[in-house]
Length: 159
Image 1 (cartoon, rainbow, N blue to C red):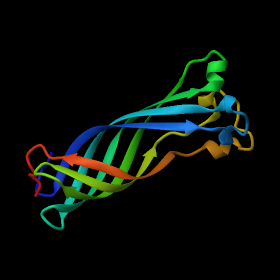
Image 2 (image 1 turned 120 degrees about the vertical axis):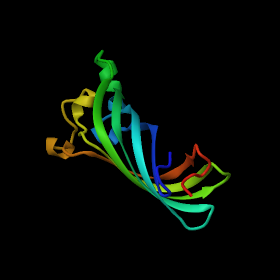
Image 3 (image 1 turned 180 degrees about the vertical axis):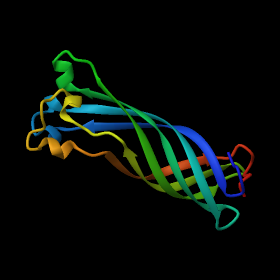
Image 4 (image 1 turned 90 degrees about the horizontal axis):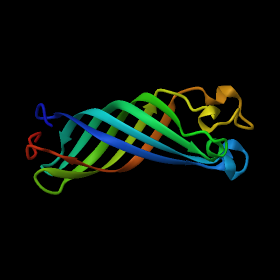
């Protein structure tokens, strides 16, 4: 929703799916698993119009992620999925093209930081073979390149 000519606020929901394969555990597929990430967020954006139909957007998303780890190791041990929760922040830059008065499509680049660390216990393991515990320290980092859309509820009120 536009606050001024160039400043917008909004919200949304991100879903992420990741597959862990045996290279991580240096073992068989019995240690592989999946990660589901559910992330509601708020967003503030700055728009810079180049033409009436083309604009660039710089934004920052911030929210809270619920991460659900499902590994075959946990299932085989009779344990349920492991859950991890954390705050995240995601700066993003995009080029957007209006297709009508309210809807634009975009190409974007982003870098997400989730403020927590990945460790072997999330996959019901004692350790990752070939890695030290220090290798699991630090925040998650996800670099993204993709497509998106923006919908203006007040018919391009930011223009």
